[in-house]
Image (cartoon, each protein chain N blue to C red):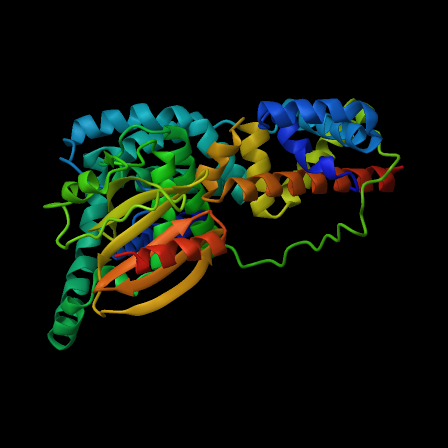
Length: 209
Length: 248
C-alpha cells in the first residue's frame, strides 16, 4: 500500500516535469481561438471524453497488462487531454482520446518498466500447423485462456492493433489515427499479429495434446 | 502463404476492401484451399477474441476520480506543490538566461526539438480532424493572400497541377506554439503537407528522413524552412521537393 502511494507520487512529479517542458501530446488538437471558460470547458470535455472511458481503460489495460497501472495511466491521460482541449474542433473524439491514452501508456511504460527483451518468436519455425482446426477450438474453455495469454504476449505494436480492431471495433482509418501510422502499416501489423496469434494457439494446442 | 491473393485476406475479413477487389477475392475463394482455410481460421480467431470477454470495462470509481481531478478546487493543491518547482526553475532560467539569453532568443523555438516527430503528428492530426484546410482552393492567388497577417513572412505558394501534384489549400498550424504555414498538396490519393517557417540560415540542401513510416523531406531556401510530410514513397516526395525548389 505504501509502495503504491510512493509510486503514484513519483508518477505525479514526473508528470509535472513534463508539464514544465510544455510539450503537447503528439495528438493534441491545435490550440487556437478563444479559450473556453473553465466550467464550459469542463462540461464539454466530459461530454466528449468520458463516454470513451471504457475504450480508454481497455486499451490501457491491454498495453500495461495491469489493472492498477491502467487506472493511473488513464487518469493521467485524461488530465493531459483536458489540458490540450482548448482547440478541439469536434473531430473523432474517440480516436483523439485513444491516441492520448496510447502515448501516455508508452511514456509510462518507458518510465516505470525496465525494458524486457521481446519473446523471440520465429515465424518460420512455427508456421501454421496444417492440422489446426479452429472450428472446434473455441468450444473448449482452455482455448480461451490460451488465446488471452497469447494476445498478452504479442509485442505491443501488434497487440494494440488487434485490441483496437477486435475489441473496440475501430476501422483501419481510425486505428491509423490512434497509432499515428500509415494505413499500410496498420494492415500489415494486423495481418502479422493475427498470424502470430494463430500460430501460437496451434503450438499450444499441439503441446497440450 | 504461397497464394498471392492471400494479401487481401485480412482486409476482406474486415470489410475494408474496395468493391472491385472484394468481388475479386470472393470469386477467388472457392478455388483456393489455402485462402479458404486461412479465412476460416481467422474467422474462428475473431469469434474467440470478440466473444471471449476480453474487453474490460473501467471501474466505476475511476470515472469519479477523473471528474474530480478536473475540478479546479482539486487541481489547486497540485498547483501549490508546483510553485516551489516553478520558483526554482525560474531562478535557474534567470541565471542561465543571463549568459545564454541572446543566443536562445535568436534561435527558432522549434529548432531544438524533434521536429520530424512533431511534424508527423501535425500531419496525422490534419488528416484526423476532417479539417485539412483552413482555406480550400486550388488557386495559388487565393491561398497566398489568405496567409497575409497570419504568418510573419512572405509565403511562396506554387501549384503543380500539370505534374500531378495539385495544390489543395492551406492551413495555419502550430509547432511548439509557433504558427507555421501548412500548404496541402495531393499526389493521387496521398496527402502532402508542406510546412513552412522562417529559418536562421538561408540555404540548405534537401535531406530525407522517416518517422513512424512517414517520409519527410527538409530543405531551406530563401531563408525559409520547408518540410514536406507524407505517406507517399520517398522518390515521389523527392520529385515534389525538386519541383518546389526549382519552380520560379
